Structure formats: structure tokens, C-alpha cells
Length: 578
Image 1 (tube, rainbow, N blue to C red):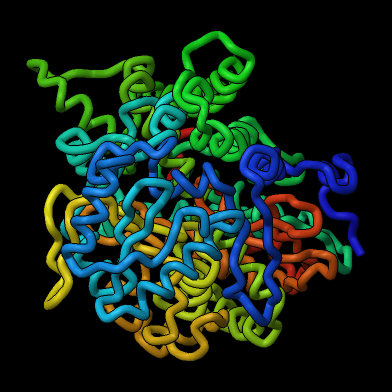
Image 2 (cartoon, rainbow, N blue to C red):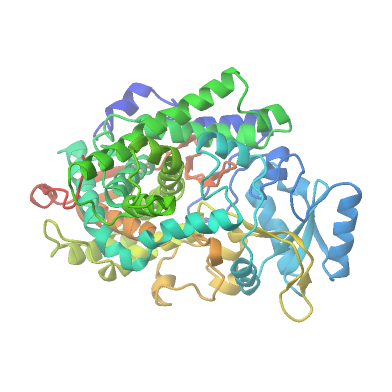
């Protein structure tokens, strides 16, 4: 068997990989969290989670019991509870049930609400009244009409890392303006312009893995790390016209961007959900923690600054940049300046005004799509029959792809179904929530008062009443049986719904399905015997962990199926910088 990546060997047994094991360590130390492994025959088994304080505020976006809209404490909580009771809602749980395993506790509470006549209820979350809905039709109605959310301790943390003008933080008119600025470059009609770059990146990934695997019978690879590096490369090339060189770094190990992102994901739970306001909110004081936070935030900005500088240099030299997301953002910004004769922004000005959101866009897929692709590879490695079907589909779909061409996703329905099923069964988002400032009519006999509403995606995604008796199983064919759609509207919330639906969902599909197709055509994957799949809620979503080594990873044994030398040896078709 091949030895695997050299950087992993150098790290030593049980060593932290790309800083991710610190996530669970921080939760165990500060919140009393636990991780739970999944048996492959029981994919619905609950994930580990933050303890009391994190359960109090994680996903609900509250910090130390405070909420800016609808929720209250003390006497206010009694008023909110009275309002819920007046609407016919019953109490279905306590916040203490959300610890030590947040997702398991959430699902137990959601099951009680689902058993009620309306499918709704409320939780006393340490003095905060939380409204809970469990039916897809209710989720759809709420998400389609409301955009308010309160990030609690995550807001100062995100502002200190990304900046305070990013889509994740903004509300109201500023949020709508920024979303409109970016969404046009990510609409389905824009995907053909990005498909060639994504295709080239997917094949370049295959080429790189071929070099790593070589002639070894099997090589151990962390497919979550591989997917993370692929995501950064694909996004850099297709959305921003820049090659970050991440594929070359796969054999070397973490780079400046992944180290920075992993630091954020490991440190944010400790700070965002702390009861100490100084830890939760103060990122300005000159403390060791804050210096380290700023160092990592600056490190990723240095890397992204190269992207912006390359584009400005290309423009200044008379180049015609592609109509990608970066160009759309630049043109929108320059147009908004409204100066007579047009405004031409410098790289420094663009980084100051757009850099935060560029970083956030890279991070968004890093924390979601990469995890879903890694999760998909895990399930494929455990089901050789399913893997064989995906390989056959990929062979047929990719055989006629030529250099400079694109992968036709319409020829890959099973690959797409595998991606969607990974998002459903072990997706990164266990909970979606909204804040309302008035009553919400959900139909006869069910009107919610104003307040914070939790929508437990984890429960809805695995509800047998919607998804069938096998809802807990990883079975991609369910998507093929329904033309690629969920069984009922509102029953699939991985990308949310409504005005705050993920603007990158179409690109995520392009990126993920292209990677799965190339990987499965040219390689075979087997489960590593000592790997225990343990998706864990870390306070910023669910990530794939190894329950044995307590690392963020998806370890697989990889074998080369066919030689890809000729097909992979082709140039990046539409780059403007490298």
C-alpha cells in the first residue's frame, strides 16, 4: 500500500491535520462537547455538538441569552411564552436538552413538535423563547417571507475576520444591494462562462492525484482536504480569474489560506459562544488571542490581494477580462461611485471595498461544498456497487470531453444525486432560522407570534413522512426517482430557501458534480479500515471528523483505474492570471 501524502507522514500519528482537530478540542474544553461516530448502517445517528453555552447560542445566533429581535429573558421571556401559549403552541423542550450533543437534542425536540397537531411548538432556551416548526410547507412559507437573522457572538467574530460589510453580516438595504451586485454572475445563465474553468480544474485535480498515487496499489488520501484544495482552485479560476496554486499544494499540505480558514473554524466556537463579553466581543484590545486572530485574518487577505492586483494589472495592460464574478463586482463598484467619465479603481481601493466579500466567498464553499464532496466520497467508498454505477456514468459522460471543453452535467444525474444526498444525510447546516417582527400565519389553527423561529433541517431532511421509511439511509436513487427534486417543496434546506437562499448554489452543483465525475472515472476508492465517519457540529456548521483520531478528514484508500496522462495534460482555457 502507498504511504500517502508526505506532509501527513511527517505530522505523525494522531497529529492535528490543518488545525482542524482544535475545533473539537476547544469545544470539549470550554463547552463539554462530545463527538459521536456514525455506523454506516445508521447514518441518522446524532452528531457531536457544543455544550450548554454553545447550545444556548449556536445556530440560533444568540450570545449569552441576548437576542435583538423577538426573544427576551426574565419577565420578557414570560411575555413571549404567554404569546406562544396564546397562539396554541405547546412547550416541546428545554435548552438543556441541546447539550452535550446539540444535533441529537435538536432532533429529539423537533420530533415532539412534529407529533403535535400543528407540527409547531416552542423551546425555553435558557430563558429565551424559541419557536419551532417542523413541516416543509411551514419552512417554505417562513423562509420565503423573512430575511431577518441575529448572529449574536458570531457577528463580532465575523466582522473581525472578514470585515463588517460582508453579505453574511449585512441586513436591510445594504444586504440587498450587495446580494444583487454578486448574484447576477452566479445565476444559471452565467454558468456556461465558468464551466470551462471548472472542468479544467477538475481534470487538473485528477492529474495531480495521478501523480500522488503513481503506480502504488493503494494510497491513503484525505478526500476532505483534497476537496477543499480543489474548491479553492476552482473558485479562484472560474469566479476570479486567478490560479491560487492550491492543487500543487495538495502533496505539500496546508497553505496560508487553509491554515487561516481552519484557525477561524477552530477558534470561532470558543469566542463566539463564550459567556465572557471580553472573549465574545472584544477583538480590538492588544491581547495574545486578538493578535493571533488578526494575524490569520491578514494572512488570507495577503493571498486574496494577489487576486485583485492581478486583475487590475491585466486591465491596465489592455487585457479584456472575462465576465466573471470579480469583474461583475468591480464594474458594479466603479459604477456606484458615479463620477463623471467613469471611475477606475485601484487594487488598494478594491481590496478595501470588495476584499472582505471576496474572502467570504472563498470561505463559504470551503465550509460547505468541500465538506459535502468529502462526505460523498466516504459513502461511495463504503458502497462499491454504487461507486461502480457512478464510474460507468462518468466514463460515458467524460469520454467526449476535449481540451478546452466542458463537462455536461445533464449527463451526470447519478453524480448529482450523490452530491444532493450527501447534503441531505450529512449536510453542513443542521438548522435554519429567521427572526420575525409580526405574526406568521401558517394556515388554519397555526399562527406564530413574532420572535425567533428555528427550522431544524436535520429533522426535516430525515423525516420518514416526507422522505420515506428509508429516510435515514444514504440512497441517491431517491433523487433520480423524483427528477432530481425533493419529494415536496420545503423538504430540502441545504441551500436554504427564499430571499436568503444561497446565491452560489448553482456554482456549487457545477463544482461538486464535475469533481465527483473526474474522481470516479479515473480512480477507485475504498474505506480505510480505521476511519470512523463522525460528522460533528462545531458551532459553525457540521464538518466530517474521524471519530478515532479526532481530525477533520475523510480518509480513503485510493487506486488509479485508468491512465489519464493525455486527457489531463491540457491548459487552463480562460485564465487571465496565474
